[in-house]
Structure formats: structure tokens, C-alpha cells
Length: 247
Picture 1 (cartoon, rainbow, N blue to C red):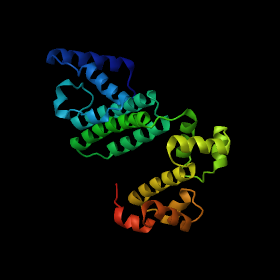
Picture 2: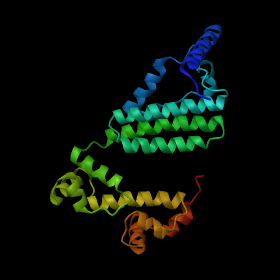
Picture 3: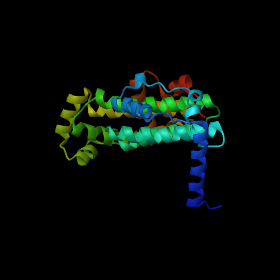
Picture 4: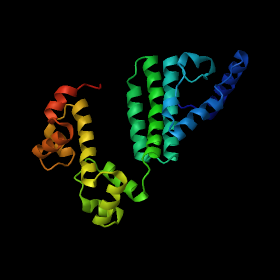
């Protein structure tokens, strides 16, 4: 059935009439503004979302049942939070990747408490993204280097690749990166790749050989050697200790 503009306008009138009868009042816009301001400030420690049952009297007629209404509210909020973090300087890819992960997890929620948990997590995690920008200020050049590494983490990354991307000389980019980040580019790339490898080992059953290929290591033995240097154990040992199914 195709819904028309007239039908929607009729429904709007019915909702307004119902709200008038019930003396309905929405959650003040100041509450939303305060929450968004905490995200802008990266003030994640002071973000506390009220339980849904305390919002019931202030939520509009969004759905036929409460679970669906809470889900809609959380989806809308994740969208708003992600755009707010981007406005504050978070890379769009980082914000949208977090948004996708939160929305996917939300789609698997089976209770009001689970949905509320995702609501709280979304506000907190987007605020943490913004806070990270304040904690680790760096030059535009070093930021571009980090961004390039992050976007290409599943490829073999060479110093030449970074130099070509940033239009800086190898020597200069190595010097400014080490000065601002306190770690060499080579070790930074290794660290970031091992962090991703840990997530894959913990939450997927992908063969270790595949993970080493995905992350651009020369061989599985090379991957294992570098992994052990950073985690003091082999990838196999790490998975045996930390593996757990997410879904």
C-alpha cells in the first residue's frame, strides 16, 4: 500500500489531538542539547541516560509497541551522535564504523535493558571519540599519517606509500611522527595491526594464516613473531585464552 502525504497529515492531526487530550509534553529540547554538548566536550564520564520507563510519558507515538519505539529512539540518537562527533573533528569513517557496529548490535537486542544499554554505549563511545581528539592533539601532517594507516590497516603499508600520500619526504615524516607520537611509524603500524589482529582472534574463527594475509604480513611466521613481540605469546595461545563468540 502506498501511503500518501494526505494520510500522514491526517495522522499528524490525530496525534496532536491525542496529545492535547492527555496533556502530553515531550522531553525538553534542553535535555537533548545538554547530552549533545557532553559529546562535543568529550565528557563521556558524566553521560547517564535515564531508564526508558522514566521517558515513557514524554515519548511520542512512534510505534505500536514500546520495544519498537525504544529501538527507533536509539537509532535516531546514534545518527545524531555520529554527526555531532564528526562536527567536532572525528573522521567520518571512524564515526560511521562505530555507528554501523552499534546499529548492528541494536538489531540483535531482545529486551528493553539491552536496547537501553546500546543507547548509553552510543552516547559514551561517541563522546570518547571526541575526547581522544583532545587528549592526543597532533599536527595536521601527523593526523594525515595516522588516518592513512587506519584506512589501510588491512594492506601492506610502506613508508613510500605514506610519503606519496602525504607528499612529505621519508626522513621528514619519520622525524615529525616520532616527535609527536613518541613512537616510530614502523612500530606504530605494527601496534595498530596487532590490535586489529587481537580483535579478530578474540571474536572470529578465521584461520591465523588468513588473518596474517588480511593484515598484510609477509608470512604467517612473520605475523607470529611480531605478534609475540607485542603480546608475549603466539596468536594461537592468545586465541585459546581470549576467544569468545560475540554473536
